[in-house]
Length: 60
Picture (cartoon, rainbow, N blue to C red):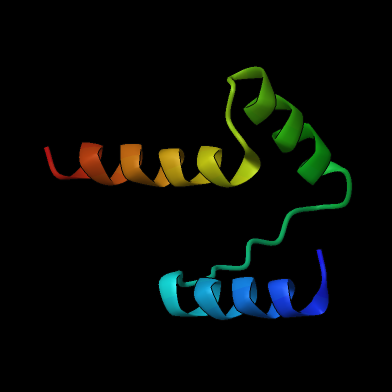
C-alpha cells in the first residue's frame, strides 16, 4: 500500500473510530490473540465482544 492510500486510511480511521490502549504483560498478547483466533475472531473483535457482553450483562 502506498503512502497516499495509507494516509487516506489513517484519516478515515481517525474520523471513524476511538482508540483504546490495553497493556498486558509480555507474552500475554500472543496468548490472547491465539485464543481469539481459535474462536474465529480477530484480537480487536474479541476484545470488543468481551466489552459488549459485559456491558449487556451489567444492564440486567
